[in-house]
Image (cartoon, rainbow, N blue to C red; front, side, top):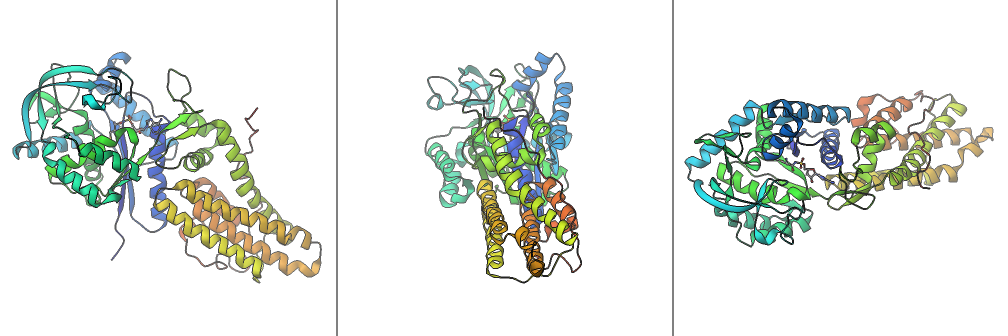
Length: 509
Ligand code: MSP
């Protein structure tokens, strides 16, 4: 049976503010996973998009002095172009103002309403505009929204409600029986705790007298639907719009921890009511902090993704984000740490190895590969890279990018030590050792070839450049299973080295 396709989602970001490090990270994770699985022969796809309705957006448009539609057109365009400039091109970018999305949301609302799972009632509750959701008293911290640290607004009005509580037991049973649905497990336990208390029904509408900027309820046009009921359905409408509706049952959601409740509780109940297949998994990451503290515009310490790319290069920025954060935990973004990793791991560990090997290939053999003649140290080198492949694959499949990269860099450390131990630059002084020098360099070219293949999902440009310097065609980057010693045909020539990474002066003062 052919492998199943694999479909990842990054959130549909609110377009009231510009793309930032948090949204960049989730989008990068989706992009990396798609590259990783495609390289391994899987049909992989990812979606992200723009969440364009609701109070927050209407307010931001008013502040900018433009009509909401013009505002979201501009901001969505900014998100798309930022992802494109960062090399993070989704298979589909869904906007919640897309006509096909609006039609889908209305269809689902109509179906659920017809089945009796939506009712009209009056309501009084505590609402956080930052989160665009109601809070229960016990969820507040000192009376404030735990995320925004602002007092929620007390709202009393008539609205439509979705019978969320009706599905509570089913969702609880699902997460109890299938722990891999929400990972890391700490987040699943948080969700289980919420599900063991009454969750209440979900207010899914806003009267137009209060908010116009939303999707009309198909059964009562005095109301628009509530943002989460709208945006979450974008994960489904996106694959239909992309002409890939069959991907839906293979979906895995990538989210930050602040939107866990909406994804792990609201969403499965909505899917059950809509009689749609459930997601396969929700994978939750932590927050990026800045120099140990909160990142915020008012503190002036926001990381601008395009600036970072301009300053250090795309691959360096990608590498740092994926190497520094353990998916699921918080991590700190510090430029000092980025430069330290750039110098030690990228420029030294990988760049320097490549330039030494390729320079010796030129100097001693004018680039021509020599025959292999494996000795014990060569076999140990091969073993190190076989181990790296195994560990990288296992860790990245589990989203432990930091561990996967660590495994590759362990093999690179081994290769650097192999150069020192076998000392081809010393042997080269003895003409009788010429075949051994050639064999050592061939082993090292294989090590570089495997490295390029492994890091390709994380460092796509570096992998391409390294392959070009090795004289290998780009399509070979996908040939992960090629046996050691078969990548270079007799007479193959490598190119002279070119620095893969800029060295940057240490920022530590
Ligand atoms: N529009 C909703 C999502 C709807 S999905 C159907 C939304 N949008 S958002 O623009 O606020 O984006 C939130 C995403 O960015 C979340 O995954 C959140 O965790 C992530 N991040 C925002 N700040 C972050 C950090 N400082 N660090 C890491 N990620 C954080 O919520």
